[in-house]
Structures are given as structure tokens and as C-alpha cells.
Length: 335
Image (tube, rainbow, N blue to C red):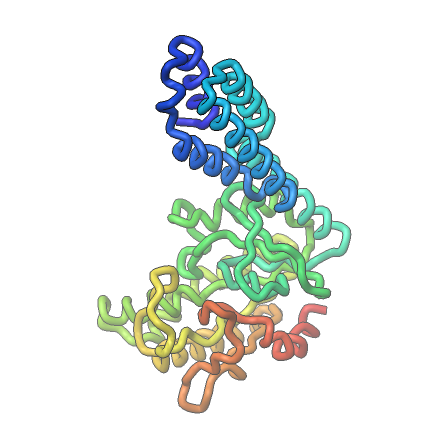
């Protein structure tokens, strides 16, 4: 039940039966007001939100004092003022679309104005925003961009936990293909540079799960993943986009505690061997079709196929900004 509805009911109850004043659940009302303001987090600057919190807390304290003195009309008046304030403060239910549209407009304008490279894919696009940790801004259709924190001309577009294996298929759980069509129609400029960033989730979660299920080698599974990915790259190229490809990074270390957000299958060494093969094959395919291929994978592993965690972000799964020096030599391929 919304706080405004609760306050309205309280006012009606007090007016019809003033004797309930000593029974009012003040702590519960405080919790309701706090929850109501939490719904505005992200709409207002922190300082402005804090001022609103202080004002509502002060008014509620005053109402409680008047209730203790049995000042019925004063309590009713203060509750009505609280109601008015809350009704004039929009919550996320009504502003989320406006915020998404603003994020969309800002990112799209920057892309058009600066001819930025669209980085398209899973959560690993975050690295190209210059932000150390995942920092997504919704732009509608369950698509995110990132706050820009880099001098490089990138516009990361996160389409969810999408897989290279089904990136060219409609009706998947991540709806990657549907989201891509929408972006090509409404966001990405004709002949733009697009850097595709897919495959890490396939390699970390699915390759060795499928080797066990299908009794096949990891190379056969990787080759199957690359078939639809290659088709997608060629389709984008045929549509006139300047397509390039980002190779998946080294896999999560076995020393990293298991996290339900980032499941894994196979050993660290196995996953890195599969990633090496994935990148080698993808690099060869890209070369055959004149598609630039960028990768820092080789610098991220030891000769024993262990991941050098120095280059990872604090979540120990995504690439951190300490890997930026590794990226710089690769950027010339996009020019």
C-alpha cells in the first residue's frame, strides 16, 4: 500500500475518531516515509533528497508532539501537508521512462556528434566506458549504455547477458537480435563503426558444460559457437557498417570465490585454453573478411594458462581499467 494512501486513511480515521491519536504507529509511519523517499533515489541529487528527508522527518516529529498534546487539527494539518509533498514528488514509476529517454538522447547525440564507435554486446562493453566497475544507464528496451569516463570515442551498448551462440537468433531469453534490430533502426548511425563484444559468457559457462553433455571436444563446441557469430558479423558488414570484433578476455581465476552472478564450468586452465582457441579462430575468420580483430587475451595469461588477475576489475570477472595500456596499441585497428 502506498504511503499516500496510508496517510489519507489516517487523516480520515482521525477526523472520524480523534481518540485514536495515542494509538498511531509512529515508527511504522516513519518507515513508510523512508521507503517512499527511497523510491525517489536517482531522481534527485543526494543533497536535495536529504533536504526532503529532513523536512518530512521534522514534520512527522512535530505531528507526534501535537498528538501527545491531543492537538487533533494540528496533526491532521501536518499529515495533509505530508500528503501534498509526496503527491508533488514524482516516483520512479512515473519518471523511469523519462530518465531512460534522457539517457538515450544523451548517448545518441554524443554518438552522432562525435562519430563514436558503438561497442555492442554483453556486460564486458563496460570496459570501454572507462568505468572500473559495471556502471549501466538504462536507455529503454532493456538496453543500457554507460556514463562516459574515457577520452576515447566509444558508446558502449549493453544488450544483456547475451551469448555469441544465439546472437543471430530471434526469441532468445536475452532478445539480443530484437534489441540489435531496434538499435540499428533508432540509434546507430549508417556506416558507423561497430565493435562486437561477445563470447566470454559462452566460454565461462557453456563450453565445458556442453563438452560433458555431448561428449565432444571443446574445439568442436567453440566452432559451433562461432558459426552464428560469424554470420552476424557478416550481416552487419553487408549492411554497410564498419564492423570490428573484440576477443573475449581471460577467464575468472579458480582463486575467485564462486558467485551466482558469474557462474563458471570447467577449470581456469580449460576455459583459458578454450578462449585462446576461440580468439585464434575468430581472428582468422575476421582476417578472411577484412574485419579488424582486437584482443588483449594473450597478455592476460601465464604460460600455464592461468589468468593474470592484475588486469581484472574488483568483481574479478570483467576487465579493469589497469588493462587500458594493453588496449591502446589495438585501437589503431579502428582508425
